[in-house]
Every structure is written in structure tokens, then in C-alpha cells.
Figure 1 (tube, rainbow, N blue to C red):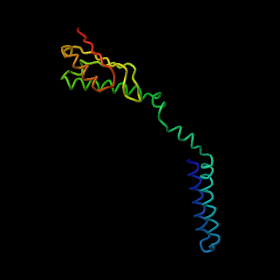
Figure 2 (cartoon, rainbow, N blue to C red):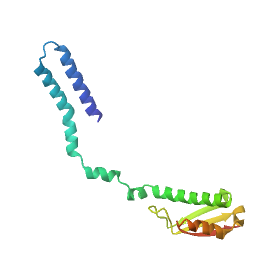
Figure 3 (cartoon, rainbow, N blue to C red):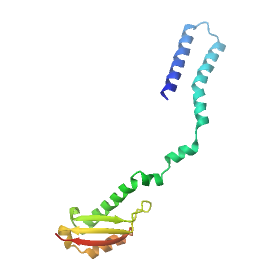
Figure 4 (cartoon, rainbow, N blue to C red):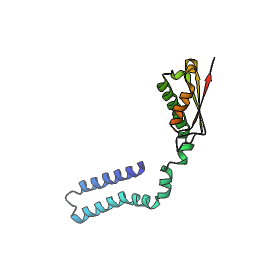
Amino acid sequence: MTEYAMTVFVICIFTGALGLIAHGALRDAERLALGIITLYVIIAPITDAVKDFDADAFFDSISGGAADIESGYAETAEEALAEGIALAVAKEFSISRDNIRVRLRGFDFETMACEEIGIILSGSAALSDYKAVERYINKMEIGVCKVEIEIG
């Protein structure tokens, strides 16, 4: 691309200098010829690029889908869902976020749901009503929730 820009720049400088040198001697036909040569030099590489353009390859390169899962988005989304669940439980039951761990099993990137959500309550959170936590998460319908209590 920079070679193309340099070529266009040089041709414009050349035709401009030629026009200044022969200022009074150029007639309309010669000015038109210089303009046509300049336009040809500018447009010729563009038409070659348009001929070589492969629309299918272009749209395949920008499409999402399986590429998203392969490039790490699924792992990031899974971590974000687990963090969101932990924050929701902490806020709903007034539990410190540090006392909640969330593990997801069977995560599906497209539906943002999973087969099973494992929540481990530790520290002061172990005294919370674990059945209420399970009901709260199960109402979200993002997976079957099972809460475990960790003491010690």
C-alpha cells in the first residue's frame, strides 16, 4: 500500500512540475493528456486489486462462531459467568465474596449456561442457608446448582 501511495505521489509531483515548466506552452489537449495519464496511474492498481478480491475469503475471515470458542472467548465467558454468580450470591445473601467459590461443569458458550454449578461456601458463609442459595441460583435457569459447605 505504501508503494502505491508513493507511486501516486511521484506521478502527481511529476505531472505538476511538467505543467509548471510548460505553463504557457500547454494547450487544452496536452493538459487533458497529462490528466488522463495521471488518472490511469492512480486507477490501474485499484482495478487489479478489485479483480483479485475474493469476497468469500474476506467474509470467512471476519465471521465469528467457532473461531470465538477457539480463540479463548469461551474460557473468558465461563470465568465471567462464575464471577457473576459469586457476586450475585454475595449480594443477595450478604456474604463476603472471598468466602464463595464457583465451579462450572459443562459450560456452553452459545447459551451462556452449564450443566452443573458448584458453589462452595467457606468461612462465615458456611453458616448461610445453602438451600436458599441453591433455590436462588436454580431460579436463574443457567444450570443445576449444588452448594457445598467447607469448614476449616
